[in-house]
Image 1 (cartoon, helix red, strand yellow):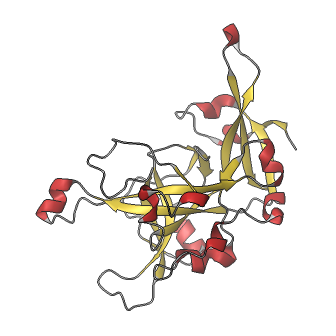
Image 2: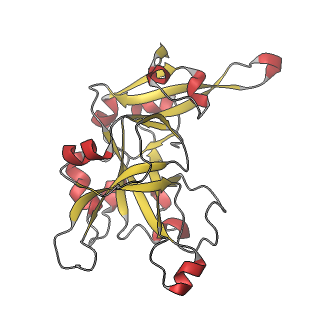
Image 3: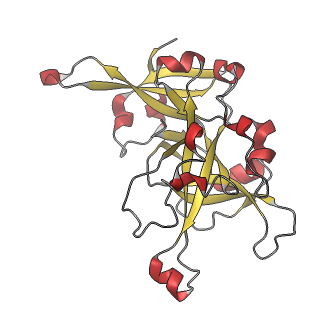
Length: 248
């Protein structure tokens, strides 16, 4: 799974970097070394201009709530926290199959965290050791995701278009290569050459795009043990990435 990650750029820089339109506006999206569930995060989508379905779909950077909220949800914050979606069952799960045909996105990140069981702590309590995975060359990762749009039932009934909430989930797949030493699942890395096909709002997703990443992509990922400071969402700073050990 992927329950915490780091992203150290802002929407304007990201939009310039990937030739996209910055539509984040005044949403509270910030650089963070400890992005946590329900945080407002940056995503990349490809959409037509509103009301112009025949124009060329453009790449756009948008703010979304991390934790997908299906359209039928009665109350925001109630129900399961859908942070991740298994690539193998996207077309089967009601919460995700509505988004798969035309609401696919990318989630940019510098790297992600995962935990392994550690030795017993004080009084024999179990501990978890955090690890950070990121590209060895310092480039940015883009993970495959899905998104959804939700609004309260009263807003739907009144035809109120001002209360939409966009939300996203990170797709996961079987871990590959050395990443299996940390966890049996990993986020679905989406290489640049797949972007156009993955983001196309007018075409179905090619199942090949949902396959575990190629070995060479995983070989370019660095794995390092980091400080348990990351275990607490209130902690946020570059010290969270300082290595305290290594694996693999």
